Image 1 (cartoon, each protein chain N blue to C red):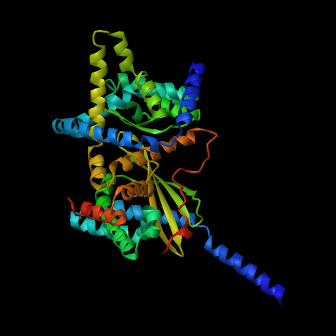
Image 2: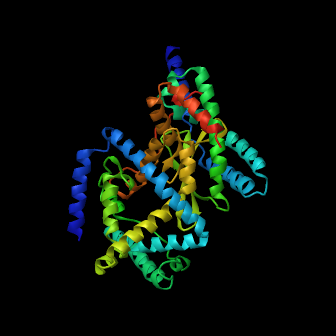
Length: 201
Length: 246
């Protein structure tokens, strides 16, 4: 009886870890990014809709495709653990809005461009994968754009975009950590500064 | 020539290892120089770049970019050879010959249309190929961000262009040739980055940290040139799910 219990426990442990560490489906991840780029470039940037309509469509795509809570936690780094619940909520909210604002403009750079898919690469986390793309540029070699995709259950979300080897998540984390270190108001100072950036034209 | 490269690579390795890549001890100097460069940019380079944009058409600027790119083509030719890529050396040499003649002094990239695609490289890449470490991040007045290795690479590239050889052969006009070309290159590059840099600066809470982080990450892609380096991409940082709350 005792042996059976131990075997059941070990089996249960393996089953559990097997589920937790399930490898992400590479084909599904690539298809997911294809959908995101198609919607972003073809249906938003290249469309003839008004700027306000394009911004609204972009915000919807941004919110549904990116795991901003996950990214926000990484970006705030060690300060996430010490932040209060209110600071966390405020930070995620302003970070999301600022990213929607900046990226709806920056994505215009991809107008008329096409993402060429170059397969996937494994990441150090089994639930995440890199989807590799290149974008042909005018008067320059093609730009590399890598999408870090995370699978949670059946849901896929982008958790980082790496343009020419520059990770947006790492860059924001370095920038925000440096700011908080210098700011006498810490995380509150960062939130206040991001709000100012959000409200300026 | 090979011994010369080996000696420089060895010298760079020793100096960059001695200085290590940790640049925290340079931060206050770097930040001061960054502020200085930002002021030079604000009051000189950016207004000139905006003026250049105002008085030229996109097509003229494309021709200038193509000309500057062609002037730098021999740098790629030399460095593809140093990296042992003989096919790329031949393509690069052919590109320079074709574009300098049929492409009207490089203002048109005729070779690209013939399937001879540009593959840019420089002495910095060659040093990376021989696994020379990058060294600390240094903000250089008037020139911007560098590491020890990129600084050595930049200096070597500067003396490998036809502009430098041309200036050597014509003492009367050498200063006009080199400074004229340097000014054209700087203004053209700045004009191309006007919108992106404005956007980054406007949305950044600590612009120095943004520039430093992006510059160093971008350089990490050269790590793959060194055969003995690992194959994991530099951006595969620890993004462990277990640390995060959903």
